[in-house]
Length: 418
Ligand code: ATP
Ligand code: MG
Image (cartoon, rainbow, N blue to C red; front, side, top):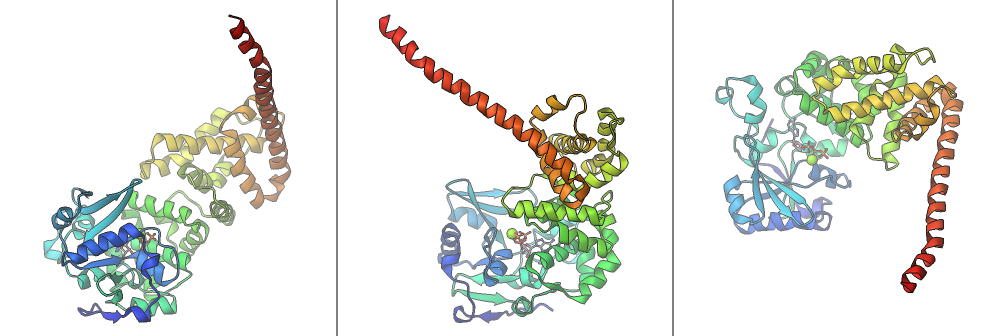
């Protein structure tokens, strides 16, 4: 599987140019290299550059230890108690992450408590070959060497990039047991890059999908939010549903066709430039389930709706330790959609239209109405009502400014006479 000597792709045979690499990252790479250390660009950035995509961030791998890195850079801070990483800080809160090459430890080296394995595994130093082998997929294990501008391929990642193939490093039957989050990452990268997943990965998911429920919730939460940020929540969760992963990933999320269609609209909204908030994502995930459990009718009180909303998003928020502020916002969005779905002309409508959270709820309701077309007229009617209020507000503000301007010469006139 892993080779100790990589296939070296010289500068003339790959498209990565230094102009595409962030200048501060280049400075760090050069400084490490000048001091005799290996200095590689690693992970997602090499993959993205080879695919002609803009990397999200540039990570650096080196054979310098964290303390050696610290001695080279004045602006360096070692972070993490168990996971020692060097952060090199630059102007504008910019941080470049430098990690010492690591390896997968032997079973006998692992700590007794299995919960500590994930962090421990990340902290045993190794060679570049070992560092490549501990990664998840071959396309994520390519290195760009600043020493001669070549790409180092220990595991056949270049071939897989060419063939648009997602292949596990090592047997996925073993690698997914080691870290079940890799199953979700497989589906995620396939959707992001439009790659085919190798059959062995599918087989391993089929066998080990239940293990997703044992993964650290904080890591699953982070990957789920990454799906929303990368605008691929709909295709990935749909694929997870087809593969039977959903109940182990998001226990309370039903993933119905209608629910997935709503996520498609959310992805489009993010693609159009509205940053996704976690509260909005949670409300979108559970909107359909909430509406089913609490059918909007003038007879249902807001108190009942709050109760139902809590019951539905409560387990998710507890499991993922979501802060109460975010949970509260998600709940408000659901209640907002409930109010909107009950229809116009009910008591308290005027006050509700003035509520600062209402436009956000209407945004979600509007997206939902694109999936449930019977709701379109209602969504439009609310939109008109809300626009009228906003116009009124802004005209009152401009009137006030106008009248203040008119008054102001008098004031100065008074001052002059004083
Ligand atoms: P992105 O563009 O989303 O940042 P990425 O490939 O850089 O994609 P990260 O989550 O930032 O992904 O991780 C950086 C690198 O660390 C990956 O490219 C991969 O090599 C390695 N990695 C991340 N998560 C795992 C994991 N669960 N198991 C093994 N290796 C991992
Ligand atoms: Mg990354």
